[in-house]
Image 1 (cartoon, rainbow, N blue to C red):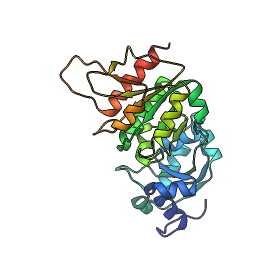
Image 2: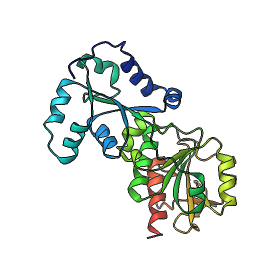
Image 3: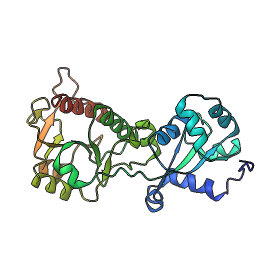
Length: 269
C-alpha cells in the first residue's frame, strides 16, 4: 500500500467507472462495482469475491479503528489499493462519498429453472425500470424468506449500482436469474405445475389472501407505470390483487410487492 493512485486515467479507475455505468460491460466482464463501507462489508460477509478494493487514507483509518469481529476480519483479509481523495469525484455516484470502492466478480447465486419448477416461492419482476423499486423488492423478498428473484429480459439490471444500494446487501444473499424469454419461461412453468400469479388492479382478479397456491408459486410484479403486459398476464395461471379499503387505485410497485409477498409467505407458515 505504498503507492497512491492519483490519475483519473488509471486503467483500474476507468474499469470501475465503466462497470458502474454500463450493463453490457458488466455482462461481458463478469464483474460489477459497488461503493460505501456498508455495501462493501456486506459483500465481504456474503462471500462475494473482490477483484480490487480502492480506499482513501481517511476511510482506511476509519476501517482500521473498527474493532467488531467482521470489521477486523475484513480489514485483515482484503488487499486495499490506496487512492487520492481527488479521485472520488470520478468514482462516487452518491452525494456523500465514503472513500471505499470495490470491483467484484459476479455472484454465483444463479437460480436454475428446474429448481423453480419443483418447489418454492419466487418473485418475478416483469419490466420494472426503477432501480430503487427493484432493489427494495429484492430486500423485501429476502427479508420475508422468498426463495429467489426472477427478472424479465426487459427488467432493470440486477447489478445496477442503484439496485444494489437499495437492496442494502440482501442482493448478495438471494438467488436470482435474469431471463432471455419471459413467455417461454412462463409457458414451461405452467407445464410443470407452477402457479404463476400476475398482480393486477382489476375487479375480476382474486384477492391475494384467497388465491390458490401450489408447491411452486411465482408472483409477478409489473412495470411501475403500465403494470404487467397483457401478453404476459394471459399466460399466467392466476391473477391476484390487493383488497384496499381506501380510495387509492393502486400502490407503488415496491409497496405492493411487499404486501403480496407477505400474504403468500404468511399463508404457508
